[in-house]
Amino acid sequence: MHTRKTTRPFTLSRTLGRTLGRAGVAGAALLALAAPLSPAGAAGTTDTRASDQSHTRVVVHLPGCEGCAVALASDTDEAAHAWSKPAKTVADGTVAFWAPTWRTRGLSVSVTEPDASDASGADTDDAAPGTTLVAMRYGQERVGGLVGRRAAAGKHRATACFAGTAAGRLDLRVRSSHLRVPSADGDGRVRVLRAWSARTQPWTGAMQHARRGYLASQAVPECG
Image 1 (cartoon, rainbow, N blue to C red):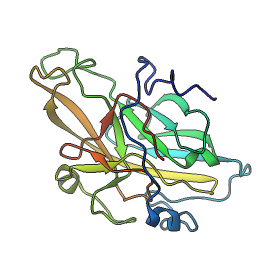
Image 2 (cartoon, rainbow, N blue to C red):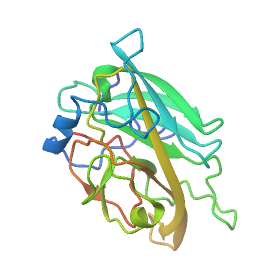
Image 3 (tube, helix red, strand yellow):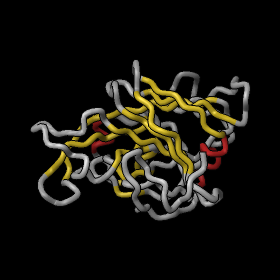
Image 4 (cartoon, rainbow, N blue to C red):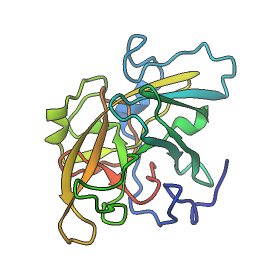
């Protein structure tokens, strides 16, 4: 499904402008496209058995986030329009999509919890800084390296942009945890979801600010 960049929202409920700057492809990420990322079953592994090599089966493994809504998007310089897949609900810890293989370059994954309210019951949809994005890579992390909760919480730079794959299947194992951050309007703090790839992925695009590992945006990330 193709949409115009000027009107495509990152989430189903909003139409907002982009906030992230464009950047070039990281050199290490280009090298990673030529080979599988890790043994079968590990985060970011690929499977070339899909019958239709023009599409890739993207499987997001997100334990502990049952009922969360996961959506895919891709926006790169080589495409005339941003691309996205409508959100699907996590069931039994996973959610799967079919995506055009060429659209896996610059692929980003968003996660929205089923209950968008804080502990007091107040609605935090408008107060949150943006929609949670899965951090494909944190600053100073090497491709293939494992990232635990404590390490993620200590990070302040991240990218949501996956470098891409030519394989028929992509498995992304995602970890998540909660934290409180200043609200978008500056009036107090809100509880948000931090999400990151359990194993650092090949990436493209510039690193963005990520407070204590929390990466979020109100628009589809532009991935160079």
